[in-house]
Image (cartoon, rainbow, N blue to C red; front, side):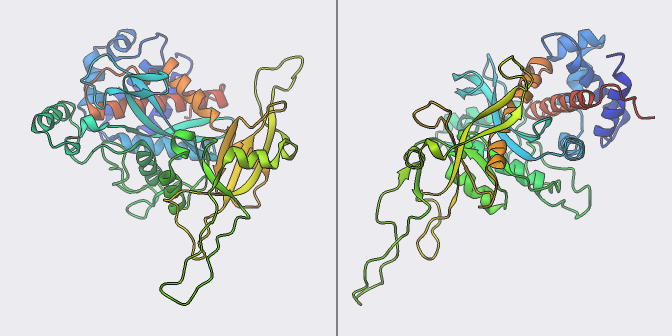
Length: 436
């Protein structure tokens, strides 16, 4: 820390430069140092002990000081846009295990982090990624229905929920919203035009990092997500409506027609309303469509080179067999065209050599002339999420926040993401001096 502190102070000054008061900027840099110092636990009291300060300084800064964490996120996102040069935005969510019931949004629900149903919070995140670097640039805390008093008519339950919300200072306009809808909100904020039409836009994005305070004006990059999002037709349609291309994982059982399936209409007998064209057969599923193409249609591709080199794999090549074909996903929520046809898109499958059928499936609305290697590379780029969460949780205390404040949670995860951005800066150029 002694060696990198001048660079950390300069970086923190840049990212926290929008904070109105100098003491807030000082406390922000102090909190960043606390997150980055050695020590497994990164809650406020252990951090304060390592820093040699009263933990009340850190607590006041995160829970009750008047500063805009959304402005900090915007600065981190714009830094990542220039420094990392992202190729895609990856959507994901992660569980924050909790013992009690008072932390905002905590409930018994399924968490991929736990691999089971458990008592936890869930945070939705957007990451700007390349194969070489990434940054967590936007966040939202998921509120289950048990934290939304408008989802029940029981007077006693309503009163109880209102008390919990008041204790955590949850804004009245923040309600239960499905995680995939929160992800779309975060993308709207990232890619939307600034509210004032200028380069900086509005800084007031709301306590939950929502999109009500103007956008950040970032590029509309392809969106990548796992099947928890990709299987939701509304999420894919929402991306399409926003002109955001996507490569999303889906289940093998997803219904679809082959691209050459044609809707037809019976002959019109001149009576009543003319029949509309429709598909006469039931849709197939992705596994059946891939099996019809056969393993001989798959190509051997290397999507990136890792760091674990072996005698058998001296370049640490990550490779497998892939094929891509055009299909028409079938779902009652997908709008039909005037001729009754469903829109077509890419089906990408990974079919490792020697396997009887594919192991992984993705849908993508990238253009029909997109090369297979680009489709595969984007499908696989989601691995950066695993790196981000491992670093954020194991090294930077992302899930160690013990406060009961809704805005405190958002500020803590924002500062953890800022600490990770600094780590990325150091990794990319470890010997660079601090700016004068």
